[in-house]
Image 1 (cartoon, helix red, strand yellow):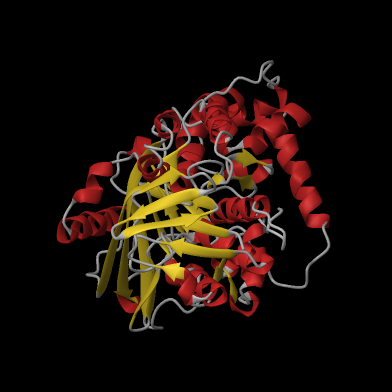
Image 2 (cartoon, one colour):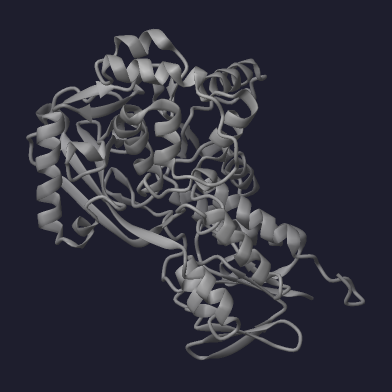
Length: 464
C-alpha cells in the first residue's frame, strides 16, 4: 500500500489527510507542535471563547464547507449576528461607517457614498469616474496601490482599500501583487471594463442564486470556535495517524520515494506533502534541491499579534457595527478591532463584551515583541482614544504569530511558476498551504484537497 507523509499540522494538512482517508490511502501527519491546528486555535477561559487566529471563514470559498461536511460539523455552523453588522473606519479622529454598498473597496450604491463623511467630495467624484477609466492594455503585474489609485483614486486607497486589505493580508499595498491577491479585480477590469460594473453584476447574480436552505452570512464560524474544525478532522483521520511534537528535519530522495529525517531516526514514504510555511519547507528540502530552496526563500513573511480583552458590559458604551479598521495614514498603532461577542454568539458571559485587536503585519510590527503588559497598555490606550473605551479589562489573552502571514509581493505568480517548474523534477513531492495561492482558510483547504487528488492509490499489482 502507498504511504504518504504530511508534514505540518494546519488546516491544509488536515484537508489533505481527510481526503486521503476517504480514498483509503495510508498516511501519517507530522506536526512539530504539541497541539495540531496551526493558526486555527480556540481556547476557552471560563465562559470566554477566544480565537488565537482566524475567527471565521468565507462560505463563498466553498471548500471549507466541503471539509466541514466531511468531518460532520454542519450542525455546528454559526452565522454572524448580522443585525449588528457594519464596518467602521477611523478617520480624522472619529469612526465613520463604511458606506453601504461598498464591496471591499468598490462602490455599488452611489447615494450612501455621497452622504458619507469618510471621503471628501473630490474623492467621491474620483471614485465615480472609475466607470470611465479604460482597462489597462497589458497583463503585467502591478501593486495593489497602483491598481486602486489608477482605477479609484488615492483617497480610496488610503481610507478604504489599505485598511481593509491590511486586515486580511497584513501586508503593504505598495508592493502587494494585485494579480496574486485580488485576481477577481483583474478579471472584472478585463471583462467589464470597470470594477463598479463588474461588482454590480456579480451582486445581481448572487442575489438571484437559489437559496441552499441554510442561513449563510458573509462570514461564518463554528459554535465552539474555528479550532473545532481541527478537532473534528483529527477524530476522522484517527489520532494514531497524527504524530505531534515530531519535527521533520529534512527530506531526501530514495530509489523509490522519499526519506524523512526526524530527531530519532528516519522513515520512508512514497509521497510527501509539505504543508509547512515556505521558509520551513525551504529548510526541509535544502539538501534535496538547493535551487528550489532558494526559490522558496523569495517569499516574504510578516508577524502579527491578537489581543483579546474582556470588559464589563456596564462600563462601556455602544459599540458600533462589528468593529473598526484603521488606515495607516492615521498614524495609530493598532490595525483593527473586532467586537467578538457582538459579531458572534456564545463568545463571552452575558454581562461582558469580548474585544479583539490586531497589531503588526507590516504596520508597527515591532509591537509584536513587546511584553504582555506593555502591549495591552498600548492597545487599551488606542481603544480609549478611538472608541472611547476607558474601562479596565477584566480578562486578557495575547497571542503572537511570528512569520505567520506570507506577503504576495509584485511578481508572486511568476515566482510560483518557477517554483512549480522546479518542483516538477520531484514526482510525489507536494507543496501546499498559505504560502502559495491564497491565504484564506478556503484557499488552504483547496490546496490540501488538490494535493490529495494528485495522490493516486496503488492497486494490488503495484500500479497507480
